[in-house]
Amino acid sequence: MAVLNAADNEFDMKDALTENRLVGLWLMMDGYRLLYVGSVVNLAISALARVGAFLLIAEFVDEVLPGDNVLILAPVFALGFVLLSFVQGGASYVSGRWSAYTAEHVARRLRNFLYNHVQRLSFTYHDTMQTGELLQRCTSDVDAVRRFYVDQGAQIGRILLLFIVNFAAILTINVTLAFISVIAIPIVFALSTFFFSRISRKYESFQSQEATLSNRLQENLSGVRVVKAFARQEYELNKFEEENNKQYILGRELTLLHGLFWPLSDALSSFQMLGGMVIGALMVIDGTLTVGNYLAYMGMVRMIVFPMQNLGRLIVQTSTALVSYDRVMEIIKEDREFLGEDAPAPVDELQGEIVFDHVTFAYETGNPVLRDVNFRVGPGQTIALLGATGSGKSSLMNLLPRFYDYTAGKITLDGIELREFPRRFLREHIGMVEQEPFLFSRSIRENITYSVGREVSDAEVETAARAAAIHDVIVDNFPDGYATMVGERGVTLSGGQKQRLALARTLLKNPRILILDDATSSVDTQTEASIRHALGNMMQNRTSFIIAHRIQSVMHADLILVFDHGEIVQSGTHEELLSQDGMYKQTYEMQSRIDDELEKELQSA
Image (tube, rainbow, N blue to C red; front, side):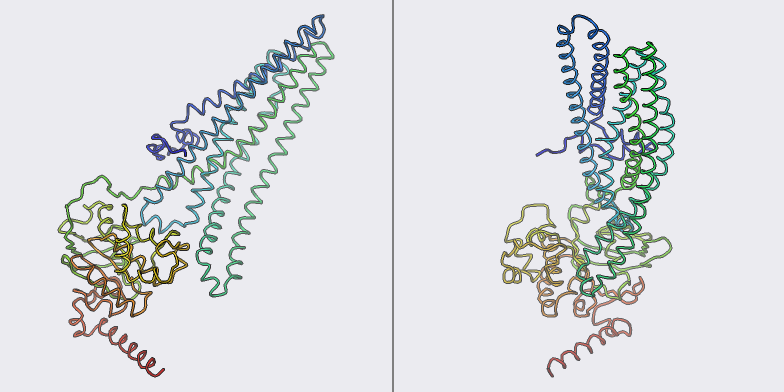
């Protein structure tokens, strides 16, 4: 199987960023330029071979046919035709092969670079960029760039060479005919330039709308269960048809522009060629042009008119590649999130002491979601965060692995400023279980072992699964056990099963700092108690954060922080907070009443 060579892996696509898009496309061919130039040279050889064939016709008609040596010279000329045909065909084949090789390798390198680049962009970028838009740019736009190399770029070079070679050959036959043959070309170029700018703008709008359509489709398919559950198929169909109609209108306008350009250029080119042939025929009648030269001229003028007509088309089509180049480069020019792969870690082994010192954080300037947060976590302690949805709990935890950087104040880990730690180091030592865990379309075992970059024994996997109270479920409920394939995004599992698998995945990582972001929200009370019991052992000697809405999930924590609108409004142990009037006590009493009522209903039932 073919693999990328060293040059492909080392080339940075940012080196192809330039205001001149054609120069940028040339720079993207780093490592393949010589091969691409070679393909154009072979096109020149092919063009010369074809011109040679036309000149051979002229020589045969004017010199051989009227003479007495026709039978002797005819095989020689036939052999010449055959040799020139082989040269023409062979050069064309080599040219096509080399240009296709270059195009496919550059496209593959671009896809790999984009895939790697997109994964390394910041959370802030992904917060604002739609998934469908990214998919469109990484697939459709990359393919448009690929088509430029395999079709438009090489063909433009071929056409220019055909023009130069054939025009020079016609000049040797008759100067007047040579200039008559190109009289319409400036008009074709003017038309091409006129339509180029308009098609460019329209194609950019078309691609943007196609990205919107792709995003709606991707979102709808991901949420198909919700759509079905609420019987909203008709509503979603209407929304899709609305976007699809916009796409149809833009596509129709784009097709109309193409439909206007091609007939105009075709008519001009055809009239020019017809005029040249008529004038050439009159010259033959007048005796100022031989029949052989006229036949050669008829062949060569076609190799000027139609290629130059096609050049106009290619120039217009190139606009799509240039638009796609811009769209791809808009992603590439974004700065990557620096993970610090090669940076040394500030400490050899984490102890887990964390201090938040007047920390403020805002996703958007002037709109903080955390305000002046202060607290200290000792090594091995368990800290619970309680508060209403949107109070800032998850945002606070996203600061620890540096998914985002705080905007004011300071966070220290073992006495060292958090920003001094490489992001990769932090993420290797911090384990997170999110409220809505993501599972891949792979086996249960692969999903659990995803958190570690090494070979894992079955015993280790089972230990993590038992700690997350999911081992018995896997063995008893799934015929293939740990080899059971999980549906896309884990749709074949219940919410509680997904959360427990995600918990097992994090526990296998054995992180020094553990963050459970409402990790038991989708499990029943009995399962939650089992998980809490298992976590009690797992959380020993490691700093742990628990985000939860149930008091039962946080009451045994060493410190409980109650958040409201991005601020800590209460802090203390369970007993201390119950002795105070405030949000914690109110929440506890309300949940206790609900639990009592449920218990009474169950007993009465």
